[in-house]
Figure 1: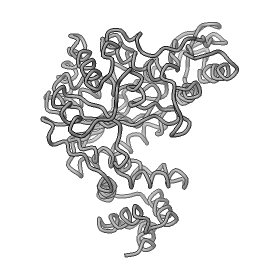
Figure 2: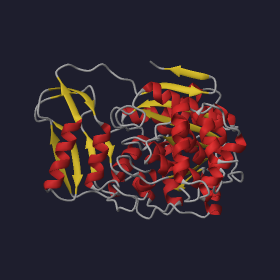
Figure 3: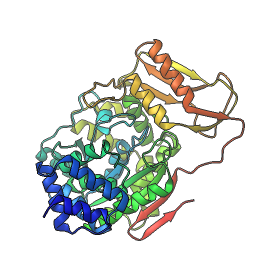
Length: 443
């Protein structure tokens, strides 16, 4: 078998066999197949696509290229949640304890942030004493004991995907939906969950800019999950503006605490209840989505979700008192108001620009090894559809000092707001749900 023949076969629109795909992934992982041949194959996939069977085979080949987590010692159906990334997305901090409090075990591996999107691990590490590295035995025991653990992702999880993604990033082949789907799902499958709920973002702050493309990606990922025997559901949600009001590590933890108290932003609360309800159904703790959602609402109202969050923080060495006193989280010494320069309505907010603004303040990483400041970031005071007057505060920067660089960030934040004379039509947060049975659209 030769790589050049498989490149030609895919170039001509033919379907590769499981043996051929396995040959490509093993050869590329070992270095026997060079970058130039693998990039040619990726470009052929970009133009010709892959069948559901091919994509599932590719996913399993990449999942099998490194460590595979065995969660079988954990009692119950383990349900994982994955977001395709967004600005202000702190859903794992809320959904983990919320779903665990309803009896569904959550054993999650998460990553750090890079660029304009924040990482769950960074947010958790803003809590004093919290540690994200546990032994396998401690990780499994904690989930059995309290129903929840979140740790840093293993460096050996789907290494073939990591190598292929780096190649795609420099060969203009990132946009291939089968390759994106297999990249996401290879890590989820290697992480060992029995069922997977996906939050697929669409809009200006997301990789998938249109609902149509987001649904295609969701369908591809659900098909992979179904093909390999994992129950999978995907929710398409809007990322045309940040989720909630807080952007920045400690700021987002504080907002997560508010949400677990039942006092969080409406959009963040609704998304967490929706994703969590799908997890509860797949976890076998409710017979329908509506029943699951009502169960989770009660867990917020009766304080069980917040108590689970505190137990989770303390189990991993963190200061659990932040669940009742979030002011103990790192706080920047200075705030700077960003003011509107005209009257009107907020017509749009470029979420990606606000994510970049938070990164420039020090809340995120421009490079993998960069240090971050847990205290800095920004909070939004106005969101899409709200009226503003010239001089109103639209956002607040949380910073270490006031200098020229910070003022440039303030200008970037102001520029991310599109203020117009007419109030925009309301855009729903939840757009559609994709399961093995098809697509259900909210709009």
